[in-house]
Length: 115
Image (cartoon, rainbow, N blue to C red; front, top):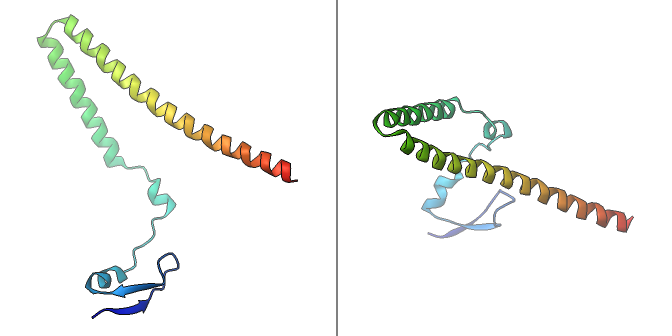
């Protein structure tokens, strides 16, 4: 039984086919507020602290077993990987901000030419 019903949401097509799967979509979901997106998660922080303590404990145990030269080599490699991650994040944030500034400068230049 395919009947056509009018949809009430302005951001979806005007007419949609009514079928069994569409009945479950009629329940409106609560929109995610800006505060919910930016909320700090303590459980995530605790998980990261536990993971970091486990990694430090494993490195300490391995350092007691193997020679100091191996520990130094592994520490240097891990340091470079962590530094690479940090630099990558900083560069992504920097280029995102620069792209916003670039488009803002283009918009200002267009407005200055028009006015």
